[in-house]
Length: 98
Image (cartoon, rainbow, N blue to C red; front, side, top):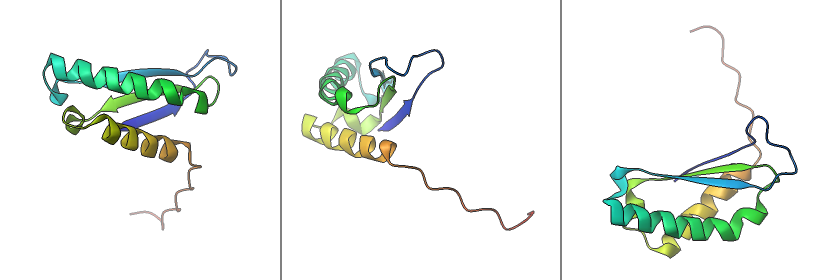
């Protein structure tokens, strides 16, 4: 699962967090994709209040999501949200020209 927590241009800081979902055909047929979308939508709705105001969350379902249980999707989502909200470490400087 890939998450992107950003504040798109023009969205006020006090705006409610928003979420969008990307579930491609690689996840499965239409029935499977819709089931994954419904599960993710339900899981994200419970977690939106934990996001900063004005945040935009994009959840991209990877192919294994088609066979995952709701509990597995929840665990992956929680892990990805924790990782996305962690402060980023600065990258080490390169050791000169290559």
